[in-house]
Image (cartoon, rainbow over all chains, first blue to last red):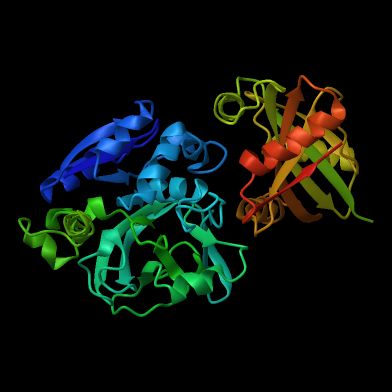
Length: 268
Length: 159
């Protein structure tokens, strides 16, 4: 079971993502954007890690989305192979049309991850880059999506975010309703009890309906703004979390990578 | 009566973002046969309800332009561009947090109480090898394929 961790110029989370992939028992290697795209067919799954591909020039993720390697990834997605985009990886998947669209569709861009706008009590209280620990609620049934395959609906995960453009917006009529109806909204930002409160500090970036992660119709492609690889070990958790005192235990983000592994095993 | 001060600001040093856009258009999106060059400017459109606009423009430029690396031109109640390229104006159609921040900074912190509104945009200057009708059609295609995400941005050909 071999996973390609994609590396574009400016990607900066590839090494910890590779550690996460290997620790759950998958083989993995870094795949530079300028390698022959045809080599991607030799992998069973893909992770596009976080960072600032091409220095976020023009728009986060847009330049990387035009690379030939992304066309090859679309072909692998059509085969049903899992693809996880984390933070900048999510932005690249959106700009390439792989999310939320159908993988055999036109590649039309159906949404944007716009600049963060934090709203509280009707007022804008903050804008721009923000990093913090957030609570996520898993809103899809288990097995709906490759990257949350073993996570039950309603489960809560504490995972960090760090981004300036994670505010999911769309002008496509009916798209949000469709995502809700077809359980394509995988994670939402919530409070520590799992309640969705659609304002800052619970909704950390102004995202429509507090959406933190979505998957495509087939469920094999997932994009998420939070960083599960940064909550992979309990020792990575913040000081106020009692689990940090049990450093040998897995962190909550590990379940994302374990899900990917299980998804590949089941679909092999 | 309100007046609009348009500050066009560009880098004196090489613009890496414009170079990346040019490279992507030529190497990845197939515009090599028609596109010659890409340059970029920032545009601040500042509406004031009093004061000498020329003097205000100089004061705003002092705050918004870093003369160590940028040049600018101020235009009052007009927005003109030179011949030789197709100017494409790209702006957010959702709320522009940076423009709001600039307005608040000018009004509240820097004492320009006559500032009514601030709008911000990017002007992409597309230099073509082809003549005007074809160039404008190519500019539209470039805007829609790369320069904007229609779910948050809008564009206008400024000729």
